[in-house]
Amino acid sequence: MFEQGVQQFLDKSDGRDKLLATVQYVAMFISAGQPGDVKKVQASVAAARKVFRIMRPLESLNPIIQNPTLNSNRPLVLELLAKLKSVLMAIYFGGDNIVWASQAGILQNKTLILRAQKASLYGWAGGSVIGVITELHELQGLTARRVGEVEEVYQARLEKNGAEITRHLLLLVHSLVQALLAVGLLELRPWKPRTVGMLGIIASALNCYMLFPALPAPAKASTKSFAKVA
Figure (cartoon, rainbow, N blue to C red):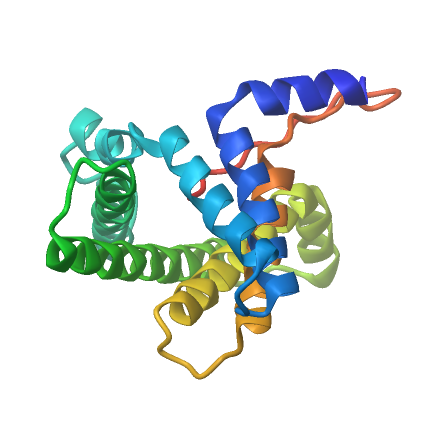
C-alpha cells in the first residue's frame, strides 16, 4: 500500500516539485553557500523544479475566477485575505516563471529578472503570512470555549474536532515556516545559508507529507484533506 501511495504522490506534478524542493534545500544545507559540486546540484535542482510550475499562476487565481464575489457566510476580513492570498501566490508563481524563462534563455533583461525574483519571494512571504492569520482564526474557532459550555461538553467537542485541529495546526506551522523561508531567501535577516536550508527542508518535508495520499487504516478508513500549498 505504501508503494502505491508513493506512486500516486509522484504522479502529481506538485509531488515531484516538492520532492525536488527537498533535495534542493538539503543541498543548500550541505553546501552552506560555498561554491562546489553540491552548490551546483542545488542550482540545477532549483531550475528543474520550475517546469512543474508553469500553470500555477492560473491555478492560484482560479478561486477568484470561479467565485469573484465575497462569501457572506464568512467574516469580510477573511474573505478579503483569501482573495489577496490568491493574488499574492499568483505573483509568486508568475515571478518564478519569469526567472525560469531567463534560465531557459528566453529572457535576457537582467533588471526585469531581478525584480521578478524579488516580487515572487515577497508574494510568497505575503501569502504565507495570510495563511498564518487564517489558520490562527480557524484554530481559535475550533478551540474557543463557547458561552455557557460546561467542561465535559467542551472536552468532548475538542476530542470530536481533534483531527481537524491537528490539520489546522500543521497548516499553521507550514505557513509560518514558509514565511520565514521567504524572509531568509530575501536576505531580510542575516541568516546563514544552513539556517535557510534547514527552513527549506522543513517546509518541503511538510509539503510532501500533506501531498502524500492518505493510506487506509486497518479497521476504519480515514482521509485527510489539505489546502493546496506553494
